[in-house]
Image (tube, rainbow, N blue to C red):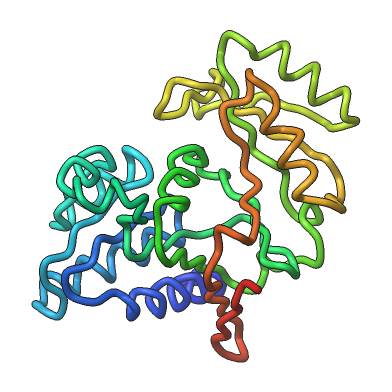
Length: 243
């Protein structure tokens, strides 16, 4: 295992230590989140964690969790089983552990490299404690230094939204799958990978993108969604807290 992968694994497994018996756990998507899912499954198998249910952020993650023996619920099932809490607008997921493609100095994120940004954001906003797991290569001063912004769009509105994003002086490309065809998300949408350059004001861009009807969701996760970032490096583990 190369060093970068080992660092990802270290961050993911450290975050799993926050999971306690009886918790509902959001299960992220991507290579780093996979390490957390595998660690969680091992702890359940060894009897170190009991009465755990996972809420997957993608079909891929759901299949992996089931394969590893983690009991899973859909978000709809979770809310149906908690009628009293839902009326109080309670966040029903205790902890979600997920990776990120870039994390800026204020703990704003870019996510969606794995294509699950819509479900990931839905799960994040229904989570009491959102834990992000990364290695130090994902850190930047400002978003856009290292990664593009994935933007999920309706197939119907593909060309319209592509033109809109280009009007913002962004470079836009349609994501393709391994067969060279347009990548289709779990919800049946396309993804545009968009280079805005350095994003000076993530909150403003978030607002602009949210106003477009053809944009289903985007990969900017503002720091108000984030509770902690577990960041591993060759010099050790540090935990960053959102202000």
